[in-house]
Length: 315
Image 1 (cartoon, rainbow, N blue to C red):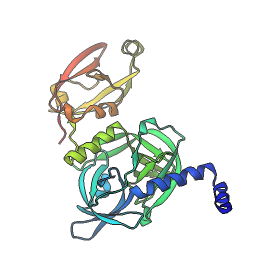
Image 2: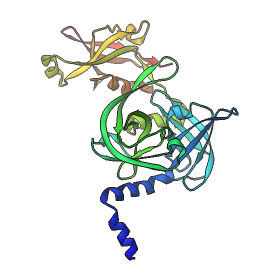
Image 3: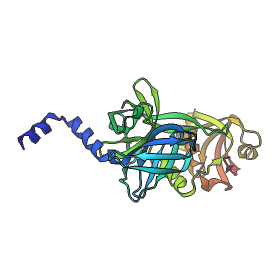
Image 4: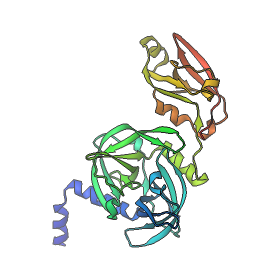
């Protein structure tokens, strides 16, 4: 009893939190070994169990190497894994282990994170399974450029930046908060001492649901390139917002071109939803918008006009 008390006293509050998070999360984190469809070893990464019946979330680039995989857990069990679907534009993928029951992690909401908040990264860097690192959220609102192999490029918005040490093999692993909730999927090393994680929030939950349901994510496509532009004070006061999305380029033959959008237009709302940056538009381009009439409120010169576009499916 005295020995247990002494050990507890030796742990400071920080260590107590990290160890409790590790104990709760480690059973849910798998070491993924990816094959090349009979042509040998394709790579490795991590995955996180999100349902008791074996669904795991991982990074799309982890499972891109092949169609066969196995998942091993901290208790020594190993299961074959089927890749259900991957979405390179969000760098998220869903796989399913052939297991009767697994230990799912609790899922949190990254939209509630604050800079300086404690986070714990758990994965399998450099082949060392069940590795735990800790740090803080060192930045929010970062963007991560992605591509899907068909020439489509996208920025994942609101990526989490952390100083918890990440290395190759951490990709697809868990970034957890102090309550052992999954708030991000580790995806990249941004530089010395910095890592990036795709946030778990309403947007990414919808992506995972689509992957689990259909094996892919359907997105609507407008056909513009744009960026944030501050609004003139009179217009900002009139609309109750400070910025809109300036159209830098309209793709020929796209829905935006058909809707008469022009370079230099500033989009301030889509339907009844205000937009101020490209990520706001991206989040609205969901499956339900494909083929539907979509009114855009646009500043053109000194005038406020409404244009109708009909998005098509991003191929």
